[in-house]
Structure formats: C-alpha cells, structure tokens
Image (cartoon, rainbow, N blue to C red; front, side):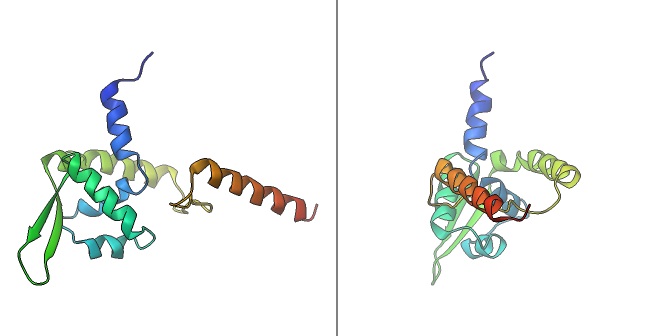
Length: 134
C-alpha cells in the first residue's frame, strides 16, 4: 500500500520540530516574534524564523508588517491555518490522556543530525549503565 501523497505532504509540513508548538501558540490569535520567544524560550531565533517562513510559504499563516517606528510584525493564522484547530485540539486531547507531561529527557540538539544525537544518547546510556551499581 502506498501512502497518500497529500497525507505525506501534510506530515512533511506539520511534522517538523517546533511547528506544532508554533501553531498551538497562534491558535489564541495574532502574535509577534517576542510572543513566540516568551512561549517557547528553548527555540532558537533561527529555527523560529525558518518555521514562520515555511508556514507562511505553505499558506498556513500570514505575516503583517505595520509601517511604524519601530516596525511591528505580527503573525496570524490564515483560513487554512485555522482549519488545523480541530487537529491541534485532537492532539491535545490525546496528550492529556496518554502523555505524562514530562518532556523527553534527551532532546535532539537543533544543530546536530538525528542519527548523531541518537548515537550520543546511546553512548551516554551505555556509560551510565556501565558505571551504575548492580
């Protein structure tokens, strides 16, 4: 069975690290860059900028530039983005039922390749097991 190309495209857009959290923040209304940083302080400015640009290119959010001093930029969900609200709500309901609320203890570093991070995690776990008492 071949995977539906539309589903594959949706997962490629929505499955990137931080994208779901950015969408969750936007569900409450217009946001500025600093609002995202306050809600998601662990995310780097570079990654936030990249994800916002990707979501804008996908037509999920729109970027409003206000001609003020200093320039004010706001991000807002489009109709396409607001259509994701039940999806985000369903993920939240699933998380409320099945997740314990503890983030992964070994997050993947944004700058490294996943395979490298996994190898480093396995090495750290092996070292911890070797040094732990029986």
